[in-house]
Image 1 (tube, rainbow, N blue to C red):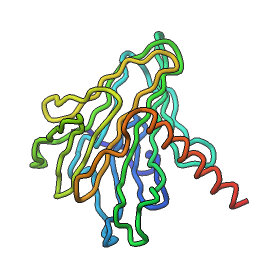
Image 2 (image 1 turned 180 degrees about the horizontal axis):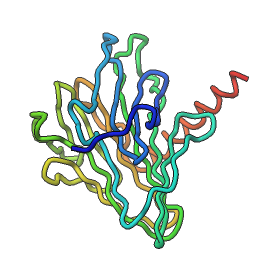
Image 3 (image 1 turned 90 degrees about the horizontal axis):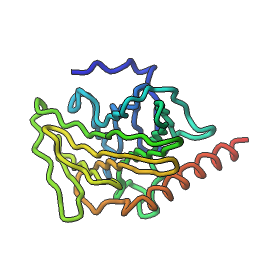
Image 4 (image 1 turned 135 degrees about the vertical axis):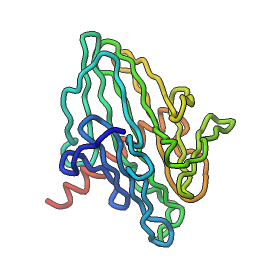
Length: 221
């Protein structure tokens, strides 16, 4: 079992409604959101002792981690002799179809990869710990995986094929400079269609999130 860093060594991301924590190694350790009844729902270390989602980058070292100015978007940078990659974690701003009481709301964390130099490969994981008595994940015809820990439906979809490897899901990536990939992790009580039908939609969500926070920061001043 991996011992996670203390709270002060995590980055917090959010959309003013939901939050998630990313540790200094780029591991997603905690997701919290409100359902329609405003009950706080959690995916955390109690269900995922190894973290909800982690990253492994081939022969690369962690360089730095920082927020984009004026936003809750968190960038984690990895580098090796052969290349460099940036992992961008964010929660998209709430969609317009969410009612005032929160109905239809989804907590979705997007893990967005950009190769900034050379060529670099690795994998993003969603860990499903056997000790938590979680039902085995299932995949549908669209390649979207679903798991139901604690009565919550967790959906996982991405821009590359996702496979079940023992007790976790794995999405491999090999990116050349300028290429991108993403993994989206969604949580709610009932299953629904995935929110990102391809990389272009994930890019759009990132741009919207960036603009939202920068506009909010400008409004304060």
